Image (cartoon, rainbow, N blue to C red; front, side):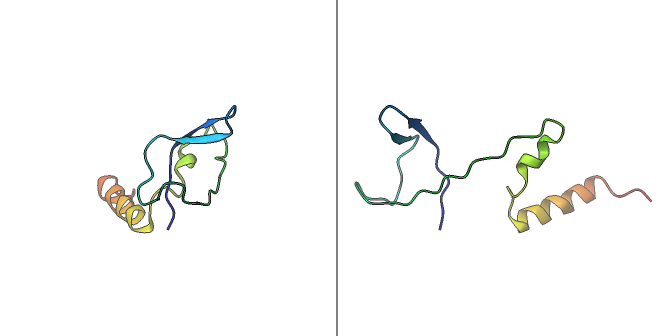
Length: 74
């Protein structure tokens, strides 16, 4: 299971400083970190930066609500 964490990088000390304590991890426990760079946001289509931010269920629910509020033109 993965977690998303916020951290500040301190280049002079070569460390990441977490914004919040990391629950469920013991002091000096080894963890593995994957760093994913975010692609730049297209100023013409900023909504694409949200791609993949909802689960399938949440996306389906949002789509149903949108269709109820804004029915297709007939």
